Image 1 (tube, rainbow, N blue to C red):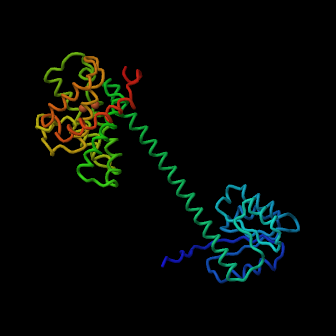
Image 2: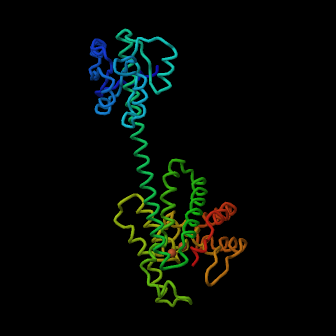
Image 3: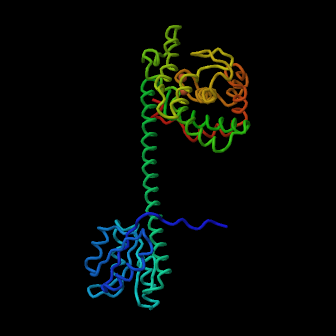
Length: 364
Ligand SMILES: [Fe+2]
Ligand SMILES: [Fe+2]
C-alpha cells in the first residue's frame, strides 16, 4: 500500500476576503479542526491586496461580489503581485455560473469552492492548497539555491582560468587551449580506464570534475619559476633544469592544507605529472602505481598535447609519429595501460584538439 500524503505540521495563514462577516466566521469555525490554520478576515476589497502583501498567507479565500469591488479583479491583482507568487488563490462564491468559474481559473485561481461545502471537504481542500503553497515555496527556495551555486561555480571556473592565465604570463606554452585539451584528453583516458576497472557511473561523475580541474592546473606551479628559466630560448643547463623542475613542488604547495576535496587531487597532479612509470621522472622518482592515477593520466595527456602542438622549437608531430612514441614509451615514461588506452582512443582524443584549437591570442 502506498503511504498516505504527509500532513503539514507547519502553521499556515488563511486570508478570507469577504464582505459578509458571517462567512469569515463560518470559515474560522470549519478550520478550527486544523490546529495549524490561522484564519484572518478582510471585509473590504480595497484593503485586500495590502492585507495579503502584509500577511503573505498560504491561501487566500476570495469572495466574488463585494460591495466595494469585484473578486475576479482581485484574483488578477494577487497573481500580478510577485510577493504572492507562493500563495494559493481560491475563489469562494455562491455563484455557480460555469463562465465565471472558467474566468476565475483563467485569471490564475487555483480552485473555485462553492460556499460552503461540508466542513470535512472544505478543510481538506484548504489544507491541500496550503500544502501546494508550501511545495511551491520549497521549489522557489531550491531554484534560488541552485542559481546561487551555479553562479559560484562560474566564479570558481573564472578564477581557475585566471590562475592559468597567471601561469601563461610566465610560460607562453601554458595556454588556456593547452590546459583545456589536457583536461579533455584526461577525461577520455579516465573513462576508458574506468571501463576496464569497473568503476560505477556515480564514482566517475564524482571524479570527472576533480580530474578536469586538477588537469587544468597541472603546471600552475610555473608561476614560481623565474622568467629567465621559463623563457630561455635555448637548452637549459643542469642547474636551470633543476630550477625548472621545482614547478612540480611549487604547484603542490599551492594546494596543500586541504580546504576542499579539490585540493588533494590538484596537489597530486601538480606534484607528480612529471613522474615516469619506470622511476626515472621527477621530483620523487616514484614508479608504477606509486604515481597517483590522475597524475599518470595527466602525464599522458600533457605530453600528447605538447607533441601535437606547435612550439617555438618544433612543428606539431604527425599522428603516426605520436602513436609510435607512445607505443615505444609504454612502460618506460608512461603507464602501459594508459598508453594503450590513448592509442585505442586516438580518434576521440584528436577530436579534443579540434574542440579547443590554439587561438592566436593564446599562442603569443
Ligand atoms: Fe609540468
Ligand atoms: Fe602542460
